[in-house]
Image (cartoon, rainbow, N blue to C red; front, side, top):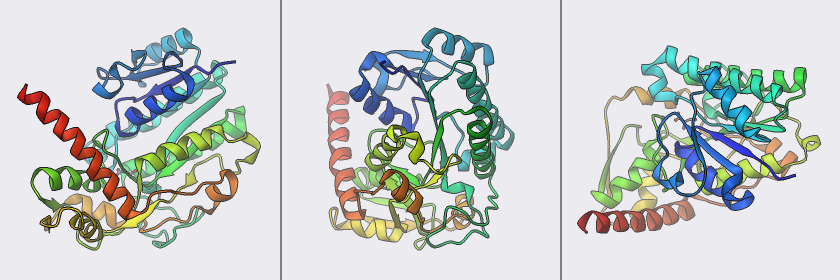
Length: 325
Ligand code: SER
């Protein structure tokens, strides 16, 4: 039987890339992109789209009834930095939205659900280096503890109702096709845009702030690999640690400088995102993902930097040309 895949929050940084990857695999008509806002340019013409508000149960019920999805990817969320400005709203969207989707997935017998967690589930007392899957977790951002609670709900629905939920604790994600929205790791995307546009960048994180990161191509491949894995191979139903590359703003700037030799970086003195970054791991131990579903990242820092700059440059040139016409 062919799959019918519903992607909720399709306009975001992950959604825009995932929708197109899934459409290439399953066929355009099998993948319903949905979002609270009008479809993003990147997904607008590649297949069907629905307006969805995960907090509106009647609306969500209608979409499940209409499409009877066999798989659902719930990507709608408020990220760490914006979450601190709108704590109640972040909790509501990240938590109530998840529970609505889990409930409908049980009711409509959806075969598989994917839900993203994050390195933000760790906190100041978690080990910083090679942070293990299981350890002290005391997240102090609303985003972080909404993700930790969400992981518990995912495991609960798996155990209690047999719902096949799968999840990854994504590191900071870096891609050229879509902009990030309101996270602490966003600097690692903005820096590429500004390097090409202005030749300089002011980082809101300090020079030595190491964080776990990952190139988007790796993240999409990890997501699809996890979703394709035979269920019996998965030992974790909360969320898998996943590692790509760990680096600091200074190291990233050094790598960009190898390609754009006059690139300059400076550092802002005080930004609330610094405290968030300081509470997170520097690197992640992802041995369960390696053992259970054969995870291995492909991009190191030089490969990612080269690929980002090359693709982003093309996109900017095409855009500038379009604006001049
Ligand atoms: N990239 C996210 C953020 O910075 C972490 O999951 O909020």
